[in-house]
Image (cartoon, rainbow, N blue to C red; front, side, top):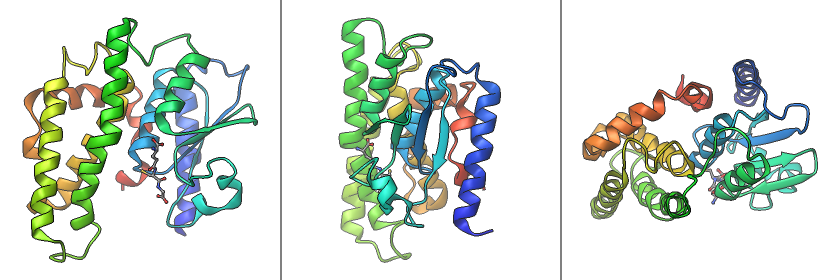
Length: 244
Ligand SMILES: N[C@@H](CCC(=O)N[C@@H](CS)C(=O)NCC(=O)O)C(=O)O
């Protein structure tokens, strides 16, 4: 099967499974199309948020390598040509993952919340999600750029060491941020932003054991990962191409 066709099949399968499981909150009141790419931590954040809130959605898995993000019809939804994006009721389109999560919480406040109820805890959850995007993701990407994105042995060793140092500090920050099992009180935008990036670092380490950073995950981070992975909707949101 060609790659694009395979992606479409995966998308339809996941969409159906997700709808079978979820009670379809708001199903009659709105339509929501969710554009994602397999393995994108930003799309994964939104996907976890949609499932956490039990919202009905139509999933469209786009393929960057097949050029889906550059097509004019997608550029009209997200002119930055990145995932994720959503389109609500065939009209309102929104991109930027954290803005989407905030919108979902405000637009559909019923059911499980994506933010803590206490104002300070809510601010901390938002801060942790912002820190993941601003620091954790760039630190991990700095390492990937010199390793998985290059041919074996072609990475700059000095840069690899610097990237590992930077990422190690970010992993320590995540460990220190853990409180009572979740990043802030209960599953929230913070966990949904940070987990996909940490999962990416672990997967990278499985593929490149010589550069693995997984040994630097602290005990609270490890326990938290297991907790996230036990969420009833975790499997639904797992990146399709990671299953293969
Ligand atoms: N700040 C954006 C970042 C989105 C982003 O960088 N998405 C990447 C995938 S992880 C993307 O679509 N890149 C373009 C491409 O892969 O062609 C957000 O939070 O939504």
